[in-house]
Length: 106
Image (cartoon, rainbow, N blue to C red):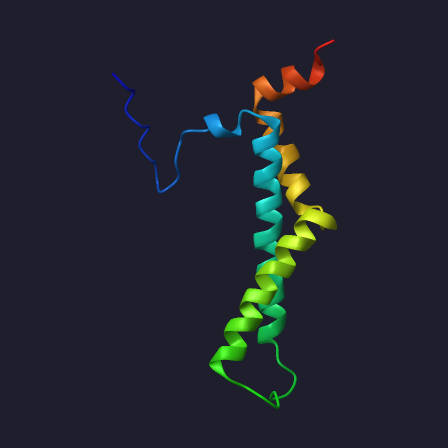
């Protein structure tokens, strides 16, 4: 007999078991960093200073795909730090993570 999934409250899932490991928390911080960087790039692209010489839907689609890849790459190699700040904040509320980091296995 399997346990029933925990229902979402206010659109936010209340199951935090996947955040219990440091690896998952780090990956979530990295993904948050990528989303934040992608939103920043999109905002910068919308602030056009002049009309582009060549403009098409295909070019717009390619630019969006390129920006998504650049933001993912930036989050992995040269993060801005917002993902780490979020990860550190969430780690403070996870007592299981704090205990495992305080007492590393010998």
